[in-house]
Image (cartoon, rainbow, N blue to C red; front, side):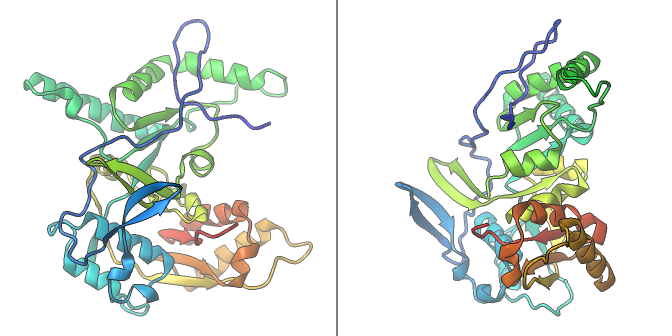
Length: 351
């Protein structure tokens, strides 16, 4: 049976109360970084389903056609956030001139579209935002101006304990015990969800953060209203868990970062990185009878460990990609930290 995800809405009394809410939709947020220079004339529009969206065309940059899929996502990101300071014309040109065998030597500023957190590292981030609001209020300012500039979602999964099992009501009782045990924490998170714009909490018992991310939170294409104009751009994320790379199986570029970096990303600060090297992994044929998905994943992991992919992007391509189902892609992406890569990307296709 499929359970619909619900965002946190609880009342700490003798029973648990949760209600269905709408999926997170980006609201107008003028703090969202958007290019105000447009050196390459990349800004354009596209019509889809009767709506018009602002986009940034990567074909405005020389060399874009030879870039791997993952670097095309980064290129669009730089075009969209070019400001002449953090993101410059020179950085964009350097990415367009990327060569597979070149050592990384150009630093770029990547601005993720959203931030995904789990409870152990996410709660301190919200505490910091609450503290900032308190400080602004004490200084005579408007505390409500302290908000995430990028959509942030916190999935409660790490603290959940299975006290009961082997009985029909085990799931419900475990959830109730979790709310009783950590009631103060959930009251605080519920306040945070109502107080901060673009911040949502997924309650305990829904699933692990990576599963929830790919099944419910990932957009693949983000749409967001900025200055009254609807913009569309690739979904990207950073997460406070090393296995955030599971979302790479959907064609969403993302990886794990520390709590400080995640909090900075929430506040609109870009992630500093060198233009990465990309290792292509060609897939051909189909999985033969008797070979499990686990066999494939472990074989790929072993091959990539031997090749050496630490700090690099791995990108899967070839005719065999079409025969790899999403579940297997997500599992391979999840294993990215095990073979050392920053990301393990599959392209967006019809699977």
